Amino acid sequence: MDNKKALKFMTFNLRLDVKEDGINSFTNRFQRVLDIINEEKPDVIGFQEVLDSMRTRLRDSLGGYTVQGCGRDKRYHGESMLIAYRTNDFELISLDNIWLSPTPRIPGSNFGGDQSSCPRMLTTVLLKHNELETPFRFINTHLDHQGPQARYLGAMEIVQLISTYSEKFVLTGDFNALPENPEIRLITSALASRGAVDCTADLEGTFHNFGRIANSRAKIDYIFTDAECEKAYIVEDIPVNGQYYSDHNAVCALISI
Image (cartoon, rainbow, N blue to C red; front, side, top):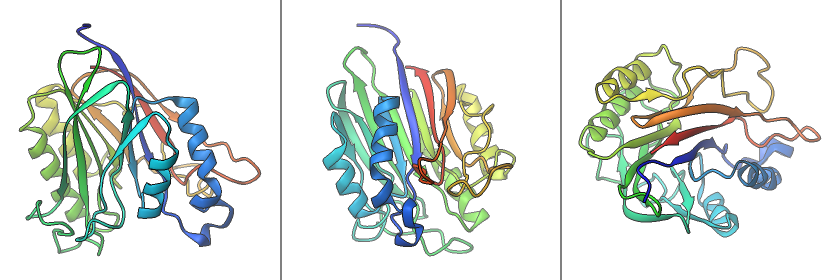
């Protein structure tokens, strides 16, 4: 078996299925989402903003991928931090769902304070590629859109969790924070001790709100790793007859594990 292998990781905020989005509702643009995945052929994907119905459609339609994750609400419904990986290439060693809160094992829990009404969580898998001897950890999350303190506490919980892992890791997600914000600075500084980097550090903004933001897009989607990041890039969202694949750009990184 090889000691290292370059794998493609993707972080992809799908945008909720909202009828008011019209032509850009998830139902209408679902085929575009599948087309992007088929074109990019990522090995592992971290999705955000995946409702129950969206999760079902992805599980039914993503040929060749195994899809893992549950909803963030107390009954495991609602938005999920969905993870997909190539079925024939990976063995799943373990799966865990953790809520970003003082009680991370209680579904639907949150920090309170300035946090929105939305629970926040992460989903993580320990995967072993068929051509590698050592498994790695993949973590996918979505921090709060409203509360800076809630985001900071969520980021702290994530880095504390990563500190308990002995394996190489890849962390993806929509962090709802700019690179200069305290929550992102916390992640980069805390994880630097184990040689981790922000693969997306040189990339431009990723949130374009279905093309409404032409310039000064917010960079809020990230891929962090303590493995070797060979390159990262934004998957351009060129509208087809006014239809985008999402309101965020998907981001890919080629990482040697």
